[in-house]
Figure 1 (cartoon, one colour):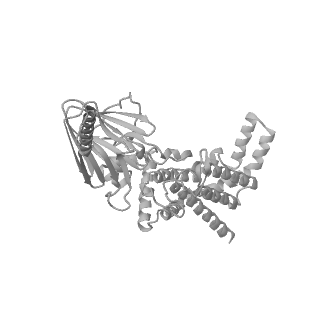
Figure 2 (cartoon, rainbow, N blue to C red):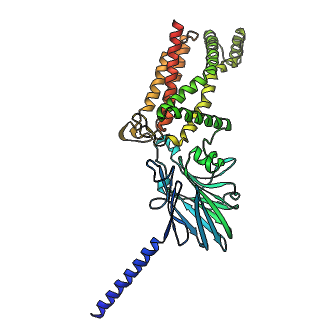
Length: 458
């Protein structure tokens, strides 16, 4: 064999040896399976190179899975110094014990797999990944500035990490630790934990944003649900969630349960609605009697004289000008329930993947038919928002009130039609579960109007 041949053979052997060594290093992993978690750890560095979280044991049929670490997903990495020893165990949560001679930094990075489906229009509000910390006071969203250290360390009773609409990946330290959050790219969110020297522990929760799953780990984690509203409204959201769970235990079809929830809320609010209706009729009667006189005042007078005569017109009928605010009672009843139901259905993990009629996922728009992409509205025709709007229009047209002057009734109908158009724009790209609730609400309102009209005519 020539020198050239010997050299080529030697290089080939060296390449094979390097490849074999690299393959052996790649296989140097330890796998842990327990509960709803599957992890593979690299022996070098002791961090997960694969992390699969499920809403039930991952091997069960129908288990919904979230890949946190792995190909096309996120990663965990040491920044700078690698600690001496890392031990991990799984007991519902993943506990990682780190022994380090000096300070070390551990970075958690989410990947594309953690990003929820991107919804168009106003639905984009449900498509975010957010860095946050969670305490007994609820959740606090964190600024994603790589140069900004989060004010105050994360206490041993607090959690910090990431959440999407239906998934969470959080850590809780055994001792107070400082963290920084950043957004390296559109598909990534990063959080760096600055661990002190010595032995410390990080407890990780990875799983669904489900009330029971969160509560079983730490009741404080339920503070991530139904947030962004006044606390009494959050309590109302929690009550609606429990009512929906009760209905779902009898009617396992999620869509029917939402429709029945709307009916149950109507029944529970019936006494308040009756009072609001009575006040509305009183205001209608006063406005019908005042309307001709007020129109005459507007035609003939201006400024202070017109104001004085308007006050006298109200006084002659024995009412205060603010008396008409009583007509807002029905609105005041509906708005808190609407806001609470909005948050409850937005954060309801049970609706994720649940179908109903032509709807494949109540947590997404109903996607009745595919069409060309339209800015803001997306690439699908959503049917439910049009059904919701149609019911509002029909209710406006069939509404009759003998106590209301014809011109005021026409004005009221115009307001309802404008409101229907605004709700169509608002709800068009919303998840189908929300739109179904409001569609059912409009349907029960129409049934009530027709029933009352028939009863009055009898």
